[in-house]
Length: 307
Image (cartoon, rainbow, N blue to C red; front, side, top):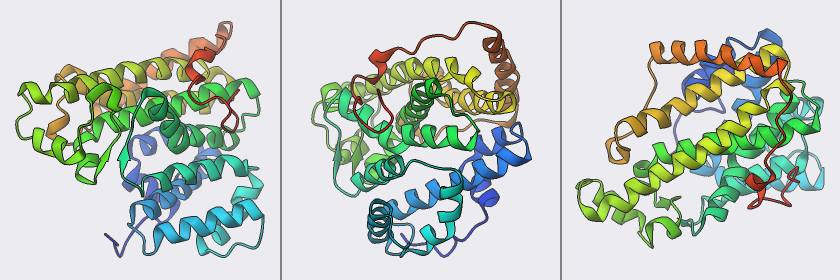
């Protein structure tokens, strides 16, 4: 549905406040300079996402045009790219990574029926691991070792997102739960099963949500392990964002994975607790860096900035 007020017409700060509450909370730890850049990156990615979802008029068509302009390095023919081009150039964002993000968003235009763990992780890389890479540029982190961990944190957050939105996604005709976990359940069937979530037929969906969150934790651990590569304030801010977002999955697990009950959210008091816990991650700055587990990237090896 096309709306009259959307992320493209907002300021970067307003887009972050409205659409990215967890990240808006974490931004206060980032400082003014990096905070502005992070908000601008968030808005750019959010507008791309809204285009893909059809919340912006002619969104998918515009996305395709932006993709073409990026690949040909030609004159920007879309107002979004015209507006953000100076920012993208100044931050030296890798074009292939932005294109990979757009490809992931455009893949949602087709019927989504994820088949396997590998396809799930590839999708999560495209729509969120890429954002982790772009964030490294925003946070003044040029250490190549950091990229693998940044990708993993993006993937972890996307897996949490999928676990939170199983029913909402099914209502849009999308099933991100791999067929290898839930069989060939169609999105319409998932919507129907949500009415009787305690029936045996719904158990595969509940188990899949549990499995998603377990998988996400592997990627959260890797993402958090790489925070020491970031400047101090960036380290703390991203730790806060990671723990607040992970808390959505923690709450799902504590309530026996109620995928049928609508979106989980985190209260202000919960955000404060997660923020206090984030300070504990600062000890990583005084410890030997943990080598990245290359097995986490088996499914995505060969994609931009994945080794």
